[in-house]
Amino acid sequence: MKIYLKALILLTIFCTIGKAEQVETNPVIVHPEQYIKISDWSVYGTWSAVGIIHHVTIENTSDIAYRNIKVRVYYTSTSTAQQAIIISQETGILPIILPPHSKDTYVKGGTTLGAGSQFMNPARIEVLGATPVRDN
Image 1 (cartoon, rainbow, N blue to C red):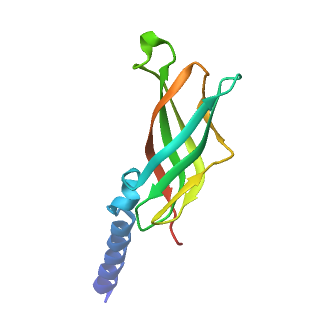
Image 2: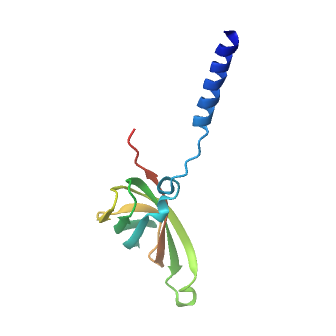
């Protein structure tokens, strides 16, 4: 009887450890950047060197919602000598929630996106990640 009890305890421990060490493989969870597409956006730099991002049109093609979209904006110089060269980049979080299978324009009032300058042109934007909204 003691052997069966020990076996049952060991089996329970191994099953619990196995569940705790499961690696997430669902691509909508692991790579949200593949399902979030930004089609339009605007950034401006204030006199106090703050970058403001606004009117961001985002599409979520996945079956789940995402929040806190992490983005990176690349800047070029306004000088003609360095106009095509990336001179700076800023990352930030868009404090929004994207419903599944949606497309809308967010942060119409603007939100801070790190440093900015009136002498830099926002050249491109990329989605770096997001937090999946899970039902718990």
